[in-house]
Length: 462
Figure: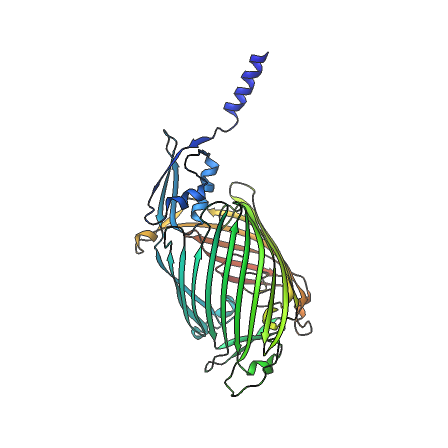
């Protein structure tokens, strides 16, 4: 009887349960500057300890290496006869120029109505990547046009899986001949003066992160902002800053405000890759304390925020992405701190032409994704340098729904949409190339105005 039981158990183990191979060594090819330790960190490999291998882990490892932004191509195979993992990579250029720019209008769709080249800001950011082979990066940014930008920054990421630190420093100076001075009828009120500068903003950020284990991180971030605004703005919106203009000596003197803030939070991140996730989740939560100073008047404020993004695999080609976010600010808030929803990536699709100001926001998104171009697809671009001639590309079809609401809206009498719950549904196409560059086309139905809205963007909504 015991022998029969043993045969049954052995049959289940060897025929039904997957047997994991063990990796005792790693061979890397193509890493001219990147340290092997960086690759071993992403795989979880430690010299002297065996690494368990399976086909499912092969895809996870490749995605982790893709997300480092160090490589334009990653290929991982296991030697069929020995316990060795072979990794072939194509490193990115250490020096790379990324075009930068923007529209004077709200977004591409709004700019396209006039297609005025003078309403563009054009420039570039020069990246010095992987400086010491440990994924460090340095950048210099400059742009010209209606918005002039000069920036500099340095980033040192985590060097291992746990008990390690990461740092980030950046300094940006932005000068513009136009300024968003208010919101009316849920649209930004813009003041333009092509002969004179209307605003200047200096932003300095110092960020420290501590990784306790692979999933959990702690964050401390200090941010300094110096805002200059033209005198005429006070008459158009006296609440733009927290205090009146005060005594001035000439008509060209600027209205000034200084804002300091300190953020403390935590992150739980289990995503399989950073740039277009299909599995895992990311949760961020934290508290911020700060003060605004204008003409020797100081007004403190506080902020609470929580943001969750989850990614769930449904089938071989399909996945589900969800987002839930809440933020609320307490204190005397100048207008520039009440810009909540409709800015950057925080918006309800179908309402791109509108803004929703207030003390906080509640935002939710869900998207069903179908993979049109999966892993392993690429194009050869012969005119580009060798490191870039093989371009990985992936594409997804999206069916999505968004819902959002402004909390404690700003001037409801002049912004009636702010007190409503906004909803939309739509269809989109995402194209991801070189692992982290995204082009997105959305077609959204706006039920408030009973119309379809098309928009092109270059960032993730989820």
